[in-house]
Length: 232
Image 1 (cartoon, rainbow, N blue to C red):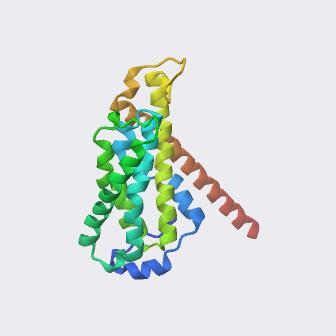
Image 2: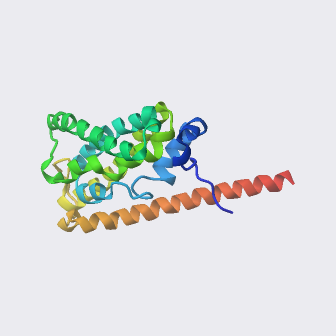
């Protein structure tokens, strides 16, 4: 039996109709973003920043804040007026809105103590055109009311941030021997700071979340079967 998606897929042919019928519950938005459709581990969004640039906890926090700031304008725009424009106009507007939010966000983050931009390299400006920004606006927010679009974007960025923070913390502690600049007395190896280590660690985390999803689905199926047997 084919499983149904938690949130209905978006129909580009009839956006206005979808907007009226597609109102997922808050619980569904949380479960989708944090588990069943995790933006990085399941959908593969913003992979390069998450796997390559997340080499310490501070990098992860900066990436998460920037991703949220860059995604919100496009998501809200798509929710409010996106259905009135054709797709070939919507997509460049998402990029322009993200680019417009980048400069003030960068200047603000630059003033926060202990924030380091040097080792983020090109990955920070690349967030402007990341798949995450596009996906939140065009694939999710376009047919959601503004408040659900806002919640979905917040949950997606937070889900990305938790993954990035876990990955960055592991690499910082066991690769550089410190955490937020504080020395940690554990065995460390600088190889964990290389890009390939991010892909390996992400593979283990992806396997873990897939195992959790499989367990939850089997548990749900068992409950449904038990309920059906009791009814008989």
